[in-house]
Length: 93
Image 1 (cartoon, rainbow, N blue to C red):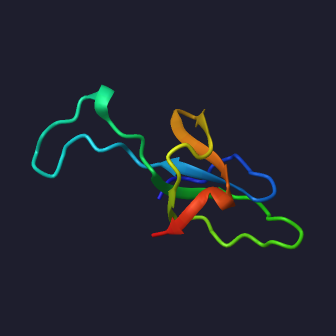
Image 2 (cartoon, one colour; image 1 turned 90 degrees about the vertical axis):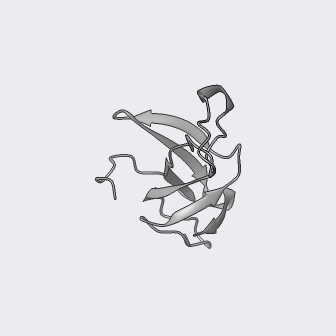
């Protein structure tokens, strides 16, 4: 697990540390950078306080699946993160 992040998301937003993209197929073929798929899972590293009538259901440390084009990409202290609404998360793995 990564160290505590200094970003505090607001309302129903979460900060997700993006999982690294696959570099090799199951059969051992190396995937070039131009053909890599954008990862669709990551680790929740910060959670907002939720909305007035909707408490947050995900928590820090959850591994989640999200949509291919969900969230806003940011780089903080040299690491890639996504900030997204909790509703953009499909499942906790």
